Image 1: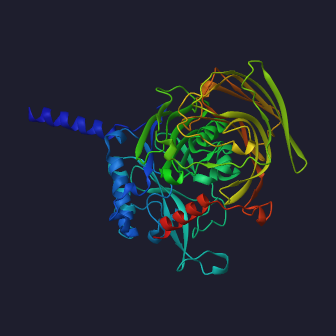
Image 2: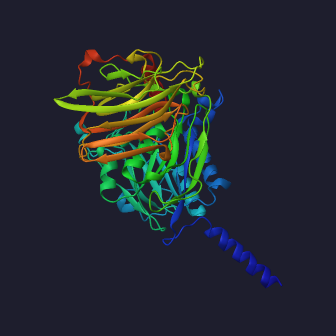
Image 3: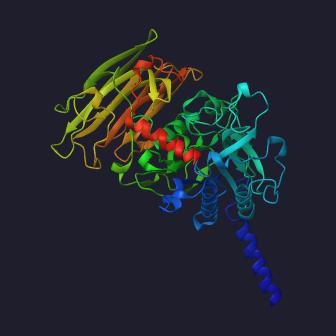
Length: 523
């Protein structure tokens, strides 16, 4: 009898150990991404903790998430950018010729790093973290950014099921990150898993550039890991809006883990599968930590259940949302008073290159004084700034919500905009002569609703025919903040203001953001 009981117990243990481990033969795997609240809402006393105390505190929170019931069946779990440690607690990590180290038992390395490795090992999970790492300066300090003899990097670290580091990536396209070193070259980093999936990985603002992201996709990578601390800007580059758009146009599985600090405009995490769109996501004005888990098809876009497991946030009035500046846009007002189709053609010229877009819209008007949105058809081709940290080339054809009939009021969200709009779009069709050369631009569908989320992929059709792109609304919508086509023009990228220094207007929100970012990094 005792032998029988022991056999049953052994069977249960083996079953539990293998639960959540997908095989190479599986048609899917289980992924988890963490929306992680920065500093976890510390009390007043805890705000005076040292960087070492904060590093340990966040490590313990990470490990608790790894041990949570929700994470039981997860094969790969991703944490966000810049939520684990700070520059003052930058750590040394194994280099590529040291990837056979058992980090869990190697006392050479930082205890917090080792504890996460031990958790990955004991729980048999792939774990991706992002943290500030340090590399000793080589001596040629004239060409390096050294701090007390060290270069500091924004780094992804990937652990396998044995707690061994199998891949690292150092962020190349930095975003106002004082004290962080840009690597001397862009790194295209991938890692293979025991369930037969190869992942590529990069960080946050890298998404806006051809390399590393688009180049990884061209090399055949179909699964992407993306730690981020995204500062959302209306109406085209909010967090999960960009995540879904990028996954859709590149037809990849995309695992995005976002930092949560709504007062500074950072939130947004999700799991996406190619043309299928969002599997699960969160965008919120709430201070929160949440683990999102979903089955992911190995072939992006293959059906899985349930789709659109979206956690709609609340308190969006408490979420800081930065705005594009619409001066320089060609535009035409959408007349809300007619039910007849409205046809507009607008053009914008940049460096003798003319972007022209045709708009065909039909609307119906409902008397509702609680909402005051006007709508414009807009076209833009040229430089645009990202919080004045950097200027990049973009091309845009879209319908956007505006506070009033003036173009400079566009791209702003009214308070309490969960109300129903006065205007329902019955039909929207937008066509533009965007370049189809993938080496020069990435052209994506773009949409945004009152929940600061993209429309489900069942509610729009995005098509490319040679140098023409087309975006059509499927069904009706009365909750649009933006709908159209957005392209990042890779030919134009600069850290300087291309319009001259006098054109830069640094807003109070930017100054506040910069100061807070510096404090978070250096304290």
